[in-house]
Length: 316
Image (cartoon, rainbow, N blue to C red; front, side):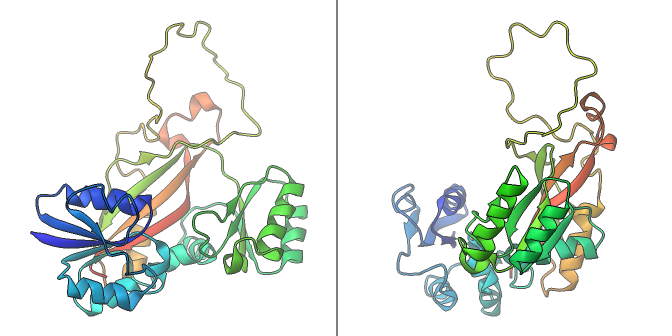
């Protein structure tokens, strides 16, 4: 049985460690550095508390010292620092993208340019490094936007203002006040899309890409201009199910791959720029509504736009 390592200290890494510990092929799971939960949640799991996830040479040395057969990386920062490349150089299998592929996480501006460069539909956006220019842009446009730190901000660098005043205040918070540090040196002002959101996990070999059914991401997404229901139900069910499905299927169409290019294109493009072609890719899609709600249930009538992507390579 194998020894595996999970790099990170959050709840995501605890979930990874627990899932790996369930495997009969895994003897023990080492979490570097881990947390209080991973210290006591399962007999197979233990922490390497002296190994920091930001210490790339330390992670590699610990993996070699413990005879680790697989390393799974949780946080983005060590991936951006090249931990997957360093492990691959020592022939240690790693589930995580190379430094180049991790640029999708490291820079939202780079990610948006990647979408545009390869013809992948995405929200309208402009990238700024100057607050005055960003402010002038916001004052000139007539559609709602979100403000995103381009760099890594620990999952907190996306602000969703509801007015121009709030948008300008958000820009000041990010670009002038440096509320998120250097992550806000570059800022993306992006059209706010309304509609159901889902994630697609694709498995790729550099040429082909397969993915299971998309997974819905239930999030509050109020439409500021709701369309009236053209055919309201005159007699709504007075006794609804006590346990309604909180995650309605965002893909009612039976075709599991309604738009192959949205998955295959980024996989192939990333494969051409890395030495490793075997990877998974997670795409987050917003299904925008362009027709009245009653007609937007059929997938061909719904436009899909990529809003974010995460690439995770295996074996570096």
